[in-house]
View: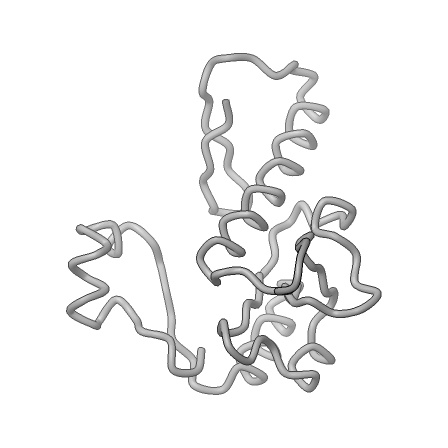
Length: 147
């Protein structure tokens, strides 16, 4: 959403090295409209922002059915208005004087936590213990690899 570069951008295509063709994506100019559309489709939206009182991502139970993770830009974050539209808001632990992280790093950290929770739930549901072997996980069309 917003002014984020899309895979149509030449620099993004070079950086992605062809992987942009492997991930389904859409661009929406109006973030609130995108959240409304997701909600109508039954997809919960979780905002990632440094908000007082928001639980740490590791303490939040992410929906096993999948979710949309809303991340603001590095300078302004997510507006209070957009946060009101989210089904939940989580934050990452930050220590020191700055309370923010690079957007790509923040996404990676939160996405890892979501995948970790899904892996635990998947293992519990099928009775398998974690092993050193890789096996594909499929959560509502989103494929991840568990180790």
